[in-house]
Length: 118
Image 1: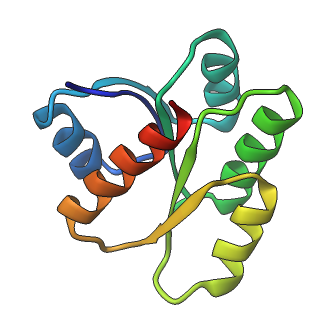
Image 2: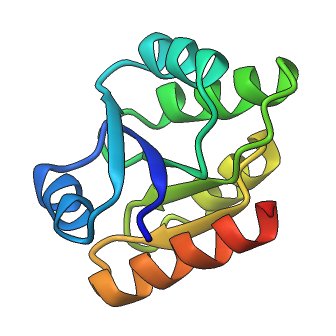
């Protein structure tokens, strides 16, 4: 059974992989659009790619938590950027995954986060 996922600033390969797995996806290329979508709809998981615009991703995490939205957030971070992961977790993310990643691990982390929410 597929998950309902919001992807924020995600790479096309990530989106394509999630679609192949049968997940229902909404996507946002801007932080403000992601915040709007996530406050209007419930998601099993939100995936935020920090590799392009980290500050936008932190803003998404903080804004959603401030608004009482508690869908699990998985951050995709640049390699060896410990500070990025720490800042993202402190902003409200639930987990981080360094890019590049094995898609099977990414998928398993999404399922684990969705289970925690239930």
